[in-house]
Image (tube, rainbow, N blue to C red; front, side, top):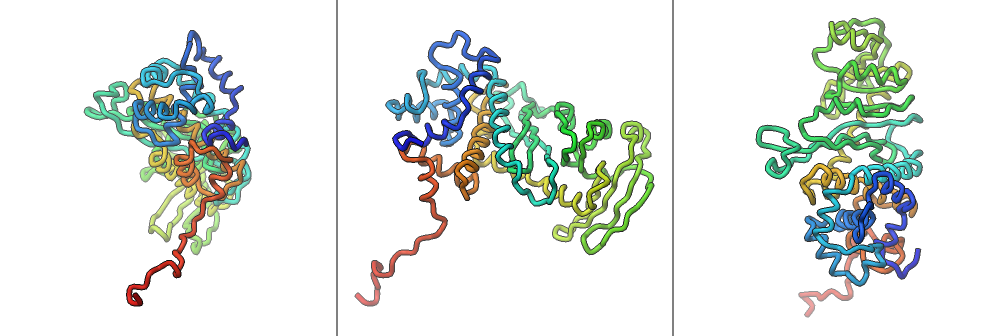
Length: 389
């Protein structure tokens, strides 16, 4: 990459601009736009994510402080708080959702052979949601409780590389299990679900799609044991059974056999009961798969700490969804950068280094090669000895 260009410009070179323009044209994003295009909007919000800007005024001030560099950073329109606010309100959020899916496809291709702790060739997804609390007076459309608003991010995470393959943004009042209806199921893939997603009609749809699920059983599950398999108690397994549901509703909604596995987690002293429709894998692998589901919780914690999704730049549903999808795009873009440069650094460290070197004019790889984890000890020769003076 050209060493005379800023690191921000070099990072944005990874964006497939042809695909971005296709997304813009699909929703007529730049129709009758004269000075502040969808690309300008995306670059502003990406800059805000990378440098931890807190508000539209914050974004405007920081970018205007580098007015002479904006053209070389890729900006073509006038940067103002009003332009950005209007764009967030009016530009269709699906532009950035579709573009994020383009980046996600690129990232998944790069991470398709990444290990995730379980020796399995099939694709494994973890599906869960996280809640971002909001002010009811500013976000009445997302009312969650009587005096509280919130948005939920329902995320399908590919555990190979922790790449979010699908994100659904809803108000806090939407129940998690209803979002299962929007998933495009992949035959042969595994879906790891928390106990809150136990809905036997929807689980049976996963079985009919020739996919597999692993979830925790409810305590009041009514069933009939059909067969059993031997287990080794030393591994934590307690039983491995084939069952059929016997509840009046559950048996009708899930008429096929299920596999029930009881497992004791010695580390946390927990007794866990798993349900799955996979009868081929070893019972211990099923338990390991469900343990890997915790990666989606770590992903939520990471994006809340290191991306700007806990405070929003606009209060409309369109502005909120736009910001969320641009944040996802930045996360995936950093993951792509890590793989392409073969960096042996965490995404957190890469993001922190980018945030303080964004306007430097040096090869982007040099910014990371100079990073050193070792604590440099001062040379003893330059230290004064108090007692020998």
